[in-house]
Amino acid sequence: MKSFILLSIITGAVFVSGCKDYLDQVPDDRITIEEVFQKKASSQQYLANVYSYVPDISRQWEGFPWLGNSDEVDITWSKYSVYALNMGNMSAGNVLFDTWGNLYAGIRSATYFINHIDGNKEILALNGQELIDQYKAEARFLRAYYYFLLMQQYGPVVLVGDKELAADATAADMQIPRSPFDECVSYVVAELDQAAGVLPLRPMNNNQVSDAEYGRATKGMALAVKSRLLLYAASDLYNGNTDMAGFTDKGRQMISQTKDAEKWKKAADAAKAVIDLGIYNLYQDPSGDPVKSLQGIFFQPWNNEQIFVRKSNDLAGWDVHCMPRRAGGWNGIAATQEQVDAYFMKDGLTIQESPNYRETGFKDTLGQSIYNMYMNREPRFYTNITYNNAIFQGGSMQASAAITFYLSGPNGKNGHPTDYSKTGYLVRKNLGSQTNIGSGGNGQRQNRPLALFRLAEIYLNYAEALNEYEPGNADIAKYLNLVRKRAGIPQYGEGENPLPVPAPGAAMRNRIRQERRVELAFESHRWFDIRRWKIAPQVMGDVHGMNVNKDGNDFYARVVAGSHLFRPANYWFPISQYEMDRGRMLVQNPGW
Image (tube, rainbow, N blue to C red; front, side, top):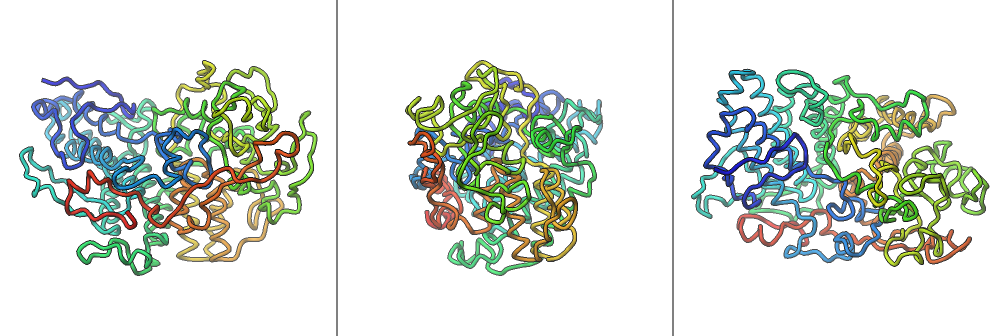
């Protein structure tokens, strides 16, 4: 009899099973399955396995390309697959960052749990049917979430449903086609709704609210995933996208060819449903300091802005990759000039609009000569970006000091052949300066969850969807302003030094997109946003930074730092040729 690996909820540990491919429907542990689902502890361990497939997207230097292949970040090291992806070195025979098989393994595991947990004698005796129903709802939520992740990356997917194929099923029995995207959306939404109808508002175990259970599925998590999914489904890539008219399977259009405004209403309603739960709030530091509030979103565990988090993660690795070499870090996750330029000025205007923006000259601040480009910027700029001569403390730097990125400086190109920022910036957002594993630090490593969904996103989802469906609705500016107010910048039409409210429609759309780019920077949204808006061809390509090949004032010049390729095939990843050969009814994504 095979033993189970003891897992705690959302540890990130991987359950030992057989082939991960989605067509392998029966787990390796079948000989023990009857016993597993008659005992409480072993059933909980099985559910923990279902949670373990929630991906750790903190690993943006090698595990996921959502930052380094968008226009907001450049990853320093050519040894990672992000470089190959940027150069177009991917094909159906060589799929980079391929999650298809692993996520279908998670789906299979969830389905098996849902189908076998009923009748667990020990749980029924100790806790009753209510706990079994909660566990089933958790697995149903996770299964829906894994489908959503597949849809983000691959577009239309294979809907397996609740059916389990026998161990001796023939190849012909296992042939299932992909479903059109809208059918996938309807299925996943129905699954999320069913889960939300059972899941508790607060994390629970044994019918008791418990802080120790944070990370377990809740009603808010299910509704938040639904909000993002329906926002995507209403967007240009999926809603009446005639560029995809040729993407068919036996005559079925895989992408909607007719725009449907009601999809925006569904997206707005889904976001409002999360808001109306009344249990989430934008995080505010008691001091009222916007910088501390922005930092606290990530460093105050389980605060009421966090909706869906992953308890176990590699944020310590994130820290060392974002930290300068002088502090013991690896200088590796570099913000682009395009992202730097996206931040507002402290007057709430863009750099193109503000009379206070300068791109020449310097100002002495805290004993450092700061380039005027970095002066008078909004609080999110200073919490998110490490720029030349910015003050830094952490890692092996015991005292505050200026960080420099010019050629001959301690973090510059001359100091190390690979560990230098090619843009002259580093990402500072969600950087635990005391956790740097490169210098042995661990001060902020404990109890630091990875926020996958938070309320600010939901506010911006709601504002965007409502602006598309009902331009001029007062809620659009209201929820956009709540995000800006917490960020410490002027609001539209209210508060101190108000700015004019953008005109409904296109003008407001532009402002919402600008806000989304800044507020959700470096949280794995930008890659998917520029694709669903169909603006990727315009914003991808060469990315820029300061001239890291120069010293002195010559450093402060915009130069090309790298190229982030985009071609039409890049809207979705290819399904691997291995999966195509096994699933002969699968149709490949366009361009592959």
